[in-house]
Image 1 (tube, rainbow, N blue to C red):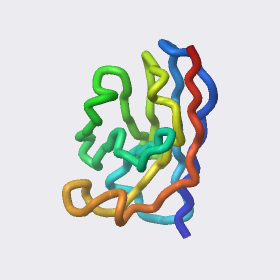
Image 2: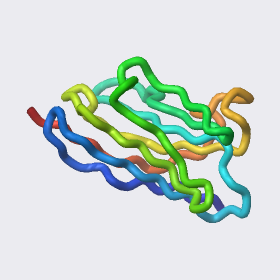
Image 3: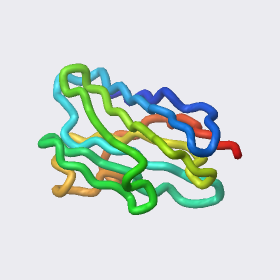
Length: 123
């Protein structure tokens, strides 16, 4: 059974940085499409960034230029480097993985979700 475990959340000041990690284990197949979603306070879960098996990435407009998604295929780890954090970035961040290409089907609907890691940003 696939396990998706996030880490790296915590507290940071506005303007600061955090790096999230997500380890995928329990399956002999390597995840193809991987991504980060977040639930900001009082809102639904929204896509933050995705990265496909070919390294192509997508970002939400709100994080472009500040966040960077990357992956270590050898270790099945997904990262999210978050710089220039804003108060509105605070929330629960989730890692999602799928075994199809990102364009083939909706990651949030068909992917495997982790439990999430909390990010707090203070002024």
